[in-house]
Length: 224
Image (cartoon, rainbow, N blue to C red; front, side, top):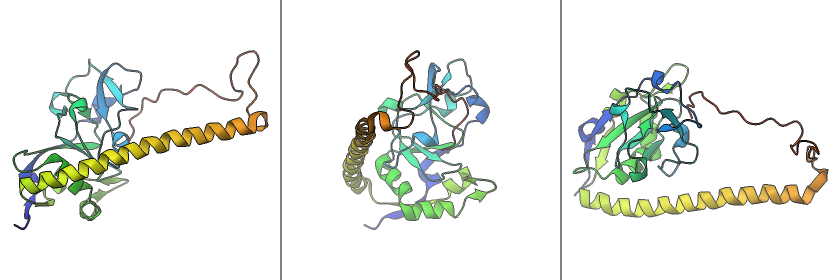
């Protein structure tokens, strides 16, 4: 049977972005609710938890924007089209004002299939053709709801999703290996150069590298 074409709005609940005013206290050194921003979404359609920032639990108005497993988070501002699948670890988190939440009808659409479909380059190109461009590209809820989705039967979606999930796991593994090797390469090069490296002399009084300042925690909202 050929895949049917349905609009995303008929297949999913699309929830607009929360107000940016809710994230004025967003920071790394805050204890509270983790917030998924565009910078936390990987090319493998996953959420990277390494640098997640949080908002204090005292912030109200976030309940409508909480995430649950099977949701999708899509970037709507700037890097339009990046999408991530929410897993069990992200349950109860919220998404940033630069994103939109997509909640599929699980009886009709497999979330892994849908995430891969929305990240497919021709589909992203179709999305980009409908964005509003002022200073940065903006994807509206209405444009997203009207996006056509090719939908095989659920059994075939799940077969495809299984294969895609395995590829995604391998992508994440290779990415972590590459990150570690990059750090090893830099450390090895520094070790081989030794004291010849500019700025390598350590202060005898403070034990700190000269000319370097401690990084400050950013409290501004990242768009990407």
